[in-house]
Length: 242
Ligand code: ADP
Ligand code: MG
Image 1 (cartoon, rainbow, N blue to C red):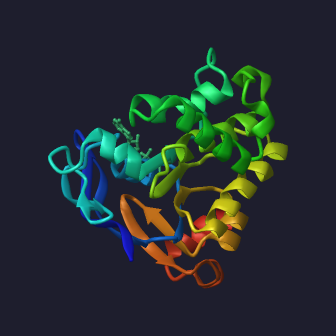
Image 2 (cartoon, rainbow, N blue to C red; image 1 turned 90 degrees about the horizontal axis):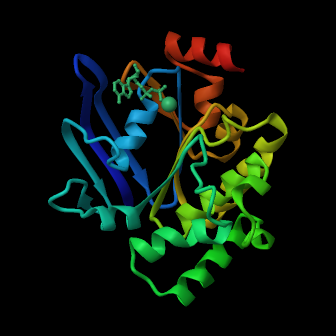
């Protein structure tokens, strides 16, 4: 079943055309890694999927519902699509538990007891059940990013978007975050990740999408794409990052 469907999506900032007709279809439970040089439009594509940016033309549907204000309210959108960023963006004066509970309480309007139960479940899932009452500053970067993942999961999204979630971390903390994502993938979570972790893309993604200058330049199974790139642009990118 197709969960995320992107049809000929265009996005410009002023004169700068950043997305030049993106077509992408992601099945439920699929893990898609988006790779490409800086400035190729990867973040803009993810932000359009979450409507942090409004696309200029084309169509995006999530679970067969079109992504625009008329057909999907912000509340509904936040229940369908979760996003984790490079910077964790936790509220520093709220505890881990409060950070995770906030959106379900405020956006979904769920009851406190139920939300706290979910918060404990998702914190357990990211290996942080003992940090419920800690403050972000008491955690390592890797732990903070895992809280950010738990916070997104607390809304029970159908798809989780991750934009370079390990790029701000010290190298020794990258693995613990990737392992959480790998476990989510194994559980059947639909994931669309922008990543520079080529090993992770190769091992965990079902499909790798290479973006170049606002277009999907090449895509395919990771083994195929990395071992047998078809375009000079992807060949060059792979030799630069590997
Ligand atoms: P990537 O994530 O692949 O590095 P981005 O999607 O962040 O690429 O950016 C693609 C291009 O769009 C870049 O040239 C960037 O400077 C530009 N851009 C991104 N967001 C904005 C914005 N809000 N306003 C103007 N230009 C932007
Ligand atoms: Mg980016």
